[in-house]
Length: 253
Image (cartoon, rainbow, N blue to C red; front, side, top):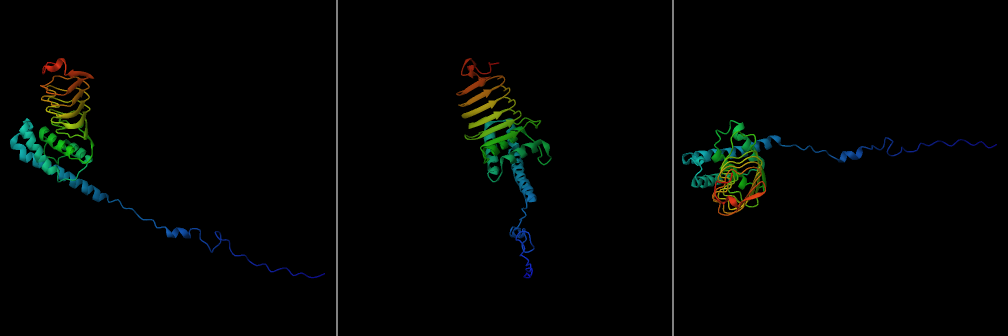
């Protein structure tokens, strides 16, 4: 019988993926995780700088127009005050959120010296008219003081929504824009407006549409009285009240 010597057992190389010669996580070394830093301090600082510029413009408007008593609402002083506001606003790079912050700050911080409804409304209107955004929202429901002149000269292509009530002279001189007030508006709403649309969801005061040249005013509640309207339409609860029996000023109750 022939002796057959057993074959020498040779070791096979380690299996790739499970042996020591291959590290399955080696390929992950090629990926580097980059840490993204959000410059929050710089964002906050930039926002504060913008607010400082907006606030400074408002303070300069008050200083320059205080002697003119713009809050007495004479049309020539309104135009002059608006031109002053334009001069300062054009130099500021701001957003719709900055306008909201300014409105909140009018009564809720000590950084703005005082709120006067007339100049504040002119300044806010100028901010809205020159804003980059086409649609803007003003949250005025938290303010105790009703702001006058909101929506002054709102141009075509702009849509302004107001949360809360507005004061006198809302949307006067409207130039084709769309103004929506979720609450009430006081007297002289839409006075001198040329074109565009005003919607007041609740009640509206006296002299509505005084010297109105065109456009439409919609009132969801009650119209206390109409002004001397030249052209345009006024609706009360979807009913046309001008032109109509309400052609006679201040007799529609």
